[in-house]
Length: 507
Image 1 (cartoon, helix red, strand yellow):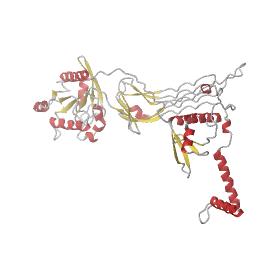
Image 2 (image 1 turned 120 degrees about the vertical axis):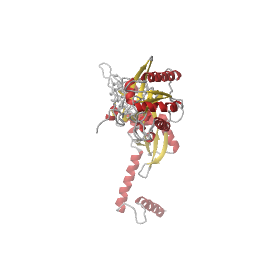
Image 3 (image 1 turned 30 degrees about the vertical axis):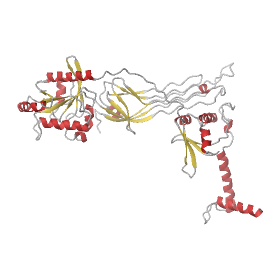
Image 4 (image 1 turned 180 degrees about the vertical axis):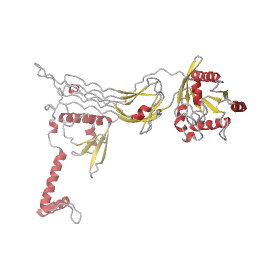
């Protein structure tokens, strides 16, 4: 399938780089037996950034390649060496690109002006090395934190051409010929409808005023409902300061005349909406044809009676082009003067409120296997879990200290959690562990590097499962086949009844 040269709508999947892992290292140097930790921090992952490039006029690059990934940050090293940051991916987009979230439809930014930027996906933060984790109580940590995953976001890019004047009209009305006559733009021109399939931009100079003109593909009745090409290209005139109706006075199509064409196009613009306040000019084109010149003289009074300025133009002979150029320049200059001056960019810092409420939520829910678990959600606990290396017991102990310091254990006890209950922390890839409130917390507990003596004891859930397994095998040896009897009782119920009956016989 052929790839188009002009694309005004595209989807982009931006994947930022993962942050580098921190390093767990101890300084080893002659005559310095207690060198201490010297593990460096991991580098930040690369971000995906959109930046406006005035030289671009299409989103075709993202039609060909819709997935862009940034590089990950390097891991920290010993000798207090931090990992290097991942390289950001800078993606150039045309001026007037609207960026919206592909899932929610929320508009993230309207990128206008050279150099305007938007960070679509931020790189993950690097993990701290053990040198940064050292405290007075934990002087030589034997672990480091892992780097965070980078953001992944799918966005929709929509181009809205930024121009001062928009040319609108029926197909083959001469819009492309007009823009070629008043500027250096060289659009495709032919004698059949819908020759123009993409918007064309031209720069026009009239006296001291320089402005841009956009040639929008031809509109037909029903364009605002998606007929023809109008539905896709009407949005390109939303940013125009003024509109110019280009009317073909030499058409031989039945049922068409300049006044009717003007009413049809105005009806489509009104149905599209948002263009009622734009100044308008009317160009009666192709007056070099004798019949067209007579028709223009006939309809001109009717159009002027509506309060519209009318220009009789011929792109072939050049008649009326100079007056039209200066008339459009006058409208653009007046509009620019009326527009309020853009205020200087002002950076406002709005820190996230601290201490405004709980940083986590806990709810009791089923585990899908007939039991239940306590689900802990929150940005901070989930981030801490993602940073933890669960193959290192000391790192797990450090996570326990952080969660307890946040008040999660106290909240679980308040909600009625019992020792051995399953607790899940995180989102879809949550980490599940057994609740052990009797485990003492505190960084002052001494252990060998990379270990945590609080985790050496057997977990309550493991003890409980071992006891249940023992009872199961004893019941199987005693009753034979273990299952439910004809009355629907399980072996546990039968065992409990027999124990109760034996206790009654003793009395």
